[in-house]
Length: 76
Image 1 (cartoon, helix red, strand yellow):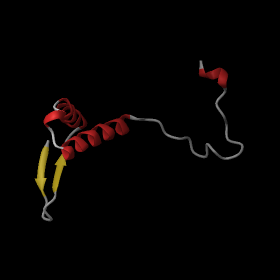
Image 2 (cartoon, rainbow, N blue to C red):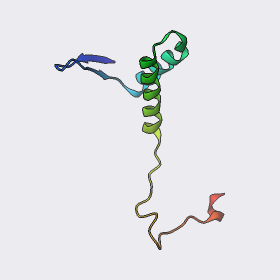
Image 3 (cartoon, rainbow, N blue to C red):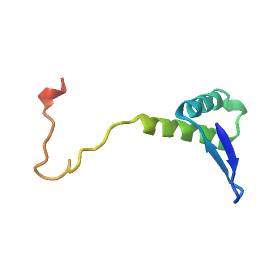
Image 4 (cartoon, rainbow, N blue to C red):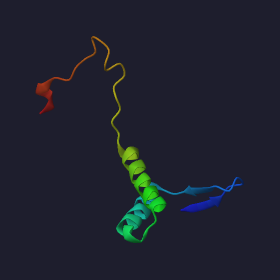
């Protein structure tokens, strides 16, 4: 993880998904000792992780009339 202070006073965190997961897990496991902003950050990292691994993509034009529908028989 790299931490950089920006000219405007903000902080830029650069970390891999694995580092973010480990950090979030550690914060959540010690939630009773953490401040609310840190907990919110940990939950945000978890949400970003789940969004990053979610590979579902809506097919283009799926809701237009005449679009192909999945067959209930092929769901087995």
